[in-house]
Image (cartoon, rainbow, N blue to C red; front, side):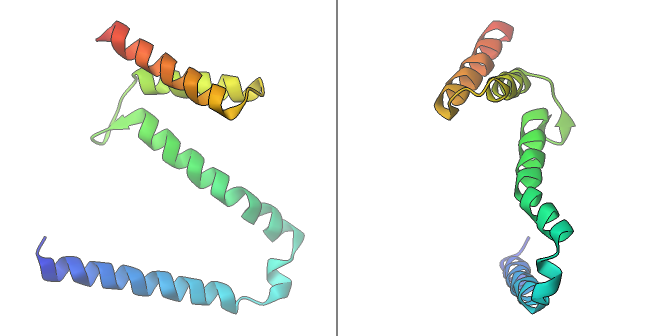
Length: 105
C-alpha cells in the first residue's frame, strides 16, 4: 500500500468516526433513555470484548487453532465463575496456557 493510499484510508476512517460520533450526539434523548435501548447499550462493550477475546484465542493467521490459549481462556472462565479475584484469574489462565504450551511443545 502506498503512502498516499494509506493516508487516504486514515483520513477516511477519521472522518467516518467523527460522523458516527456526530450522529450519536444527534439522536433525541428520549430514544436513548428507552429501557430497551439502555439494556442493549450496557451489554455492547462486553459483547465486543468477548468477540475480540474469542478471535484472538481461537485463530492464528486466519485459521482456527486449538492450543494453550483456549485452555487459558477456559481456566479464566472457570475462575471467574467461581468468583476468584481478577489477579488470580490472570495468573491461573497464564499458568494453564503456558503449561499446555510447554507440554505440547
